[in-house]
View 1 (cartoon, protein in one colour):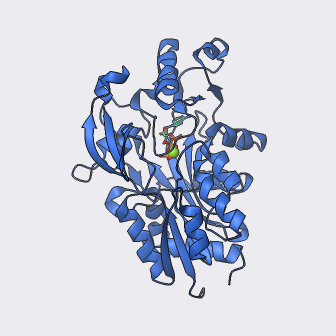
View 2 (spheres, protein in one colour):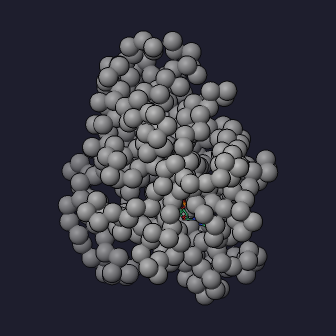
View 3 (spheres, rainbow, N blue to C red):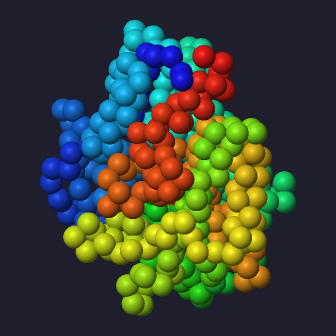
Length: 364
Ligand SMILES: Nc1ncnc2c1ncn2[C@@H]1O[C@H](COP(=O)(O)OP(=O)(O)OP(=O)(O)O)[C@@H](O)[C@H]1O
Ligand SMILES: [Mg+2]
């Protein structure tokens, strides 16, 4: 039993959506619309998915309540004042669920501040968080260590399509987003024309490079890992049943599938946990996930997306070292679901993450 600690919970909360406005003036696709979001005193124009990665108040309060079962918790919002706040609060350890404010290294912002101040925190360090958010950097490391991941190319301009050499079909994604932002049903491309259109969409809408990957058509899994080194635990594997998607939809867990089609009043039952798979396949999935966790130097927890290639071999799609943790089981949040099936209800799961960090940092 870990002693009672002063824990700071560091988070970013989804803003209040106040008004739907047209973006006609900016000459973009009118149908997509745009949402005005209130941030303190100012009104900011932003895309509908801008804050998809951030946590809701419900999630943040659920994490706080879980940690309060055993510790004293102070809340710190990961905004521009966070540095001062951490200095003032002087927590013994930070529970980090902050997605960060902006930029490709946003998830690394709070951990970098905490490293500078010498305060221990849960989860991966700024290097790993930054690398995993840039999916191409993560894939380069996986490839170096021969951990299977689909062939890919990063495009920063449409001109680079001239040298594009990956066999279609492919999937086109923004280089550094999560929560399926920018991964739409239309992101699978089967022709050069579709490829061009999707690369253009990512470059324009997200103002960031497009990652184009070979599309793997096999089964999809997501795997939660908890702990470190010899005590690293792979929680029960989840299969995403892609045949449960609406008729005519492409077989991917797209933004539409995650945030629009799967609603609590008409849910799509896509998750199967534990996955119904042969022990041999389960072993191979667990193995690539452990390897990915190790070579990317993840800590304490991570959720890893996996897809089978045409030979049935598990490939790493991406790593989420700050996994989503919605508390309500009806919301089908993968990490808490895997933990629940592994004998760790929500509160125990979060305290297990904290314990892993406490042991790792020698705080006990
Ligand atoms: N190379 C690929 N082959 C087949 N399907 C893919 C590939 N890359 C992505 N997908 C599909 O697109 C989905 C979203 O892609 P990805 O996991 O990279 O995005 P994300 O926004 O980081 O996801 P998350 O919500 O897990 O953070 C995957 O769950 C999978 O269904
Ligand atoms: Mg994913």
